[in-house]
Image (cartoon, rainbow, N blue to C red; front, top):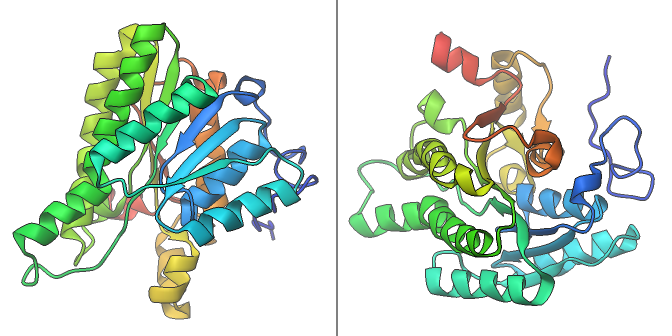
Length: 278
């Protein structure tokens, strides 16, 4: 049976593992990742750091950010820069992105990852809660892109922007209407921005994960019965982890994908096929 255990971030792990790609175009490139202090975002920070990128990331959990930095430096890679920021505060987010560009150099890769899949019923929904869902999962992606695209157009530098989506809207997941609406909008937003920014050499794609195992999922919702259900629905019979999202994100960020824009790359072990086609 194939061993799908993720490679640890060590000097013998993802960076030097001959089974996985190293992208020369990512070495030294400035990368910014929102929501990088936990979950998929933390794995993205580690993966880009292991590629030799100059990584900056934000989050709302300083202890999580420091833990990620510790893992990266213990593995022998350059320390990423953590900045505390709530992405719902657009002015603070844009100021932070401009500061990163001014201090580290032009951001060549922007990964709009921050989000929360909080559960809520339709009956419990209020206008304030609705606005918060969209502000947490959608709005910041637009305005972060606006900031980086403006700087890239001014300097003439190319950039790759990757928006984090979700197949939850394709599956019509209940009790997630704010989250699924945001994630469905990301797919449309990505295609429109790719058209608008393509003439400037700015690529915009979406990475669309399926059911990913994270510490948050383990703590709040994961159980053996749920694992069994997902595996039965998937074409591939193993649970996906954050590293399965990180590796294709590296590809979309690298020059190896320089002819790809406006796409929604689904990484879900075939889970969405059941809902979309069945």
